[in-house]
Image 1 (tube, one colour):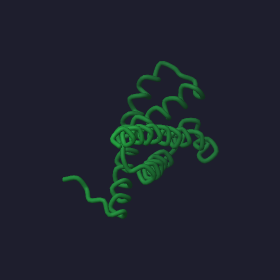
Image 2 (cartoon, rainbow, N blue to C red):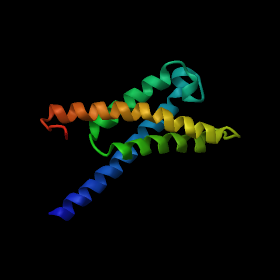
Image 3 (tube, rainbow, N blue to C red):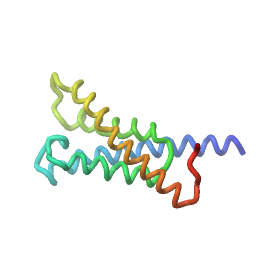
Length: 126
């Protein structure tokens, strides 16, 4: 019984990572058609709104493993930048900004997760 729970929990953590990564990569994919900017954070308002929406979706769909979701959000954006954008001398600085911006994603995911748990009758840990 314990083994099954641990395996399921690991699968859920992995799913949380890849969901967050996919959502945040999608933020960058849709940046060009929606804003005309190659880099999502160059558009006014779009990046912040996209971080909030992606965090809300991720946190509501998988209301646990928030640190894993944070890492997934960071990895998804970093992977997109590495694969599709030209990297230059400011790439490392960009990674630092991504880490900071992912806090917005994380905060929204935490709120969405708490709301989902509350709606399902799960009491918060005290």
